[in-house]
Length: 248
Ligand code: PGA
Image (cartoon, rainbow, N blue to C red; front, side, top):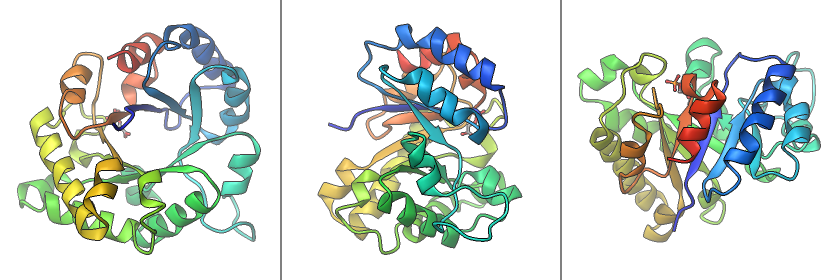
């Protein structure tokens, strides 16, 4: 059985005080869940959030990292730096990073390798633009992104990766892929993993859906057989919404 994983992606939102208050507010309300509960916050909040989440079942993730251990990379943060403060997960290749910060399939692959080598759980994002969807290229685009992201990742490490399928046209737009459409693409990503590895590996990898997930649609999405969780932007910013998402 794959353990469901609900992750908030706060993007560039919240002060330290706001973030700490959020964790304090939700911790009692998500304590009984079997769902892996994760908040991915801006770098400046991470150490404080790890501190306030100690002793709870809430894990703290970053939204990006560099693939090198150290060096002259102004503005970047390494996997060791995240590990040092107790971060457990890292989002890799979010479409906003691909679109605005020159993230490529190659850097996604390098970062995935590094995260795994350092014991961080990578959440690797893939997804198509509206144009690509309309041109019926959704599956090809996702396949290319996934094949590249997993290049030279061993069959032993592959199940440690979480995939987030996030159709770009559904992110922050209020438009959601129908749960069935999302499940179709995610089932296809599983087939790609069968081709790369085996049935067993493909059955183990957790695949989230992301794109305008909210309390009103989370249950339907989570009821789909191949969808193992959600990566949530907007609706993860309000504590009461996030609690509902985790307790879908
Ligand atoms: P959204 O963002 O939930 O606001 O659509 C999802 C994401 O970008 O991960």
